[in-house]
Image (cartoon, rainbow, N blue to C red; front, side):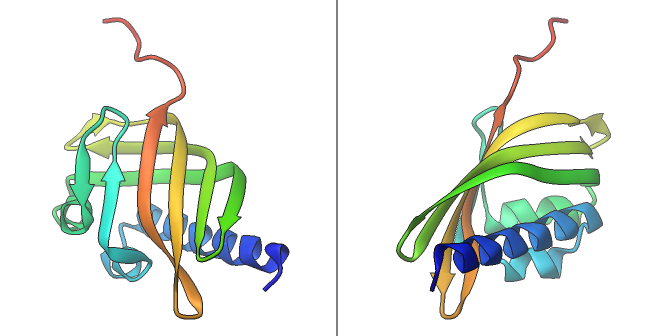
Length: 130
């Protein structure tokens, strides 16, 4: 498989992730991550797959808009590390979670397709002083 086709496949999975998060589509999100998926949030909290999905099931986390851009991927056999920027308008329990985040995804091969094993978000700028 060529690097271009792997990058295209990763981008397609990433685009499905963006659409599913923006739609709060728990079934689509569950289908594109590993069973042992982990999310590391911008303040260091860690969510497993069910905790991550439960935010959408409960309606606690609502994403209004989401984009994934400036993505650079590195391929290591059956693993791809992609680093990009996530721009979002979202809210957790009614509190805005809008912003720009540096986001790292780890994709792993699952048969003939790719799934997300982990996502880590980092703030691109320090929080505003209160």
